Amino acid sequence: MADKKVPVKLEGTDFTQIFIAVFVIVISLVLFALYKRRKSSKRGILLTGLCDSGKTLIYSQLVHNKNVQTHTSIKENIGSYIVNNDVLKIVDIPGHERLRDKFFEQYKSTAKGIVFVIDSVTLQQDIRDVAEFLYNILVDSLIASSSTDVLILCNKQDQTFAKGTTAVKSILEKELNTLRVTKSKQLDSVDPKAKRASILGNPDEDFDFDALKVKVDISESYAYHKNGSVDIEGLKKWLARF
Ligand SMILES: Nc1nc2c(ncn2[C@@H]2O[C@H](COP(=O)(O)OP(=O)(O)OP(=O)(O)O)[C@@H](O)[C@H]2O)c(=O)[nH]1
Ligand SMILES: [Mg+2]
Image (spheres, rainbow, N blue to C red):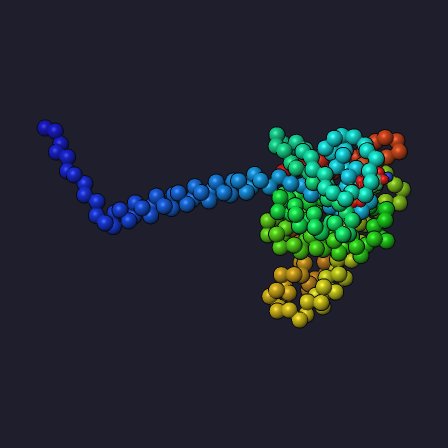
């Protein structure tokens, strides 16, 4: 005997539950799509640092695989670098003090990683400027909250008096420690919560890159050598993580 079909009657509450379930699924799908889009739109690697540190030459070696005669940049260079079957957008930002902040602000939201290029020969004489620029990048709320990785690239290692990673790291940590005290004093008048957010790392301990929220690596390079060789392998290795 065939089963007699009993018509299912949906009560008002059933409709509400189905509606809520569908609503939650749709919202989740939309959020997931937005998250994926945001993630995939972040393919930028910013080359930053003071004037003359070698950003444009590194950019040229990385993107075009060639040496070029460079001049002080007044605008950005943007090019593609392929790694792990994916494209990274390399953005070479001018280091001039009047331009660097403007370009950094413009591109920071696209940054998956930041390469902070240092002239390892002149570091000691430019230390105040270098430390201030690096501090501002590391304390930037967008950089800290979006887990953007940072590579300190000690360039011009072809030069006899270039400082290596260990020396550069220790010089920078010492200067950033001093700078943090100065910044902390300047912020004494603001409310303690806002002050804490504007101070890099733990002010009760010596400044240490490893204690920061932002992951900071350090490596050496030379984008020029009089014998024609180039070494940007440390940078390439770091880029391979993305
Ligand atoms: N010896 C040596 N010279 C380098 C190296 N990298 C760059 N240079 C030279 O340093 C000078 C400055 O290089 P750029 O690439 O123009 O520097 P930049 O950081 O782009 O400078 P701005 O555009 O002013 O911010 C040029 O004369 C380069 O040839 C390096 O690894 N070794
Ligand atoms: Mg340049």
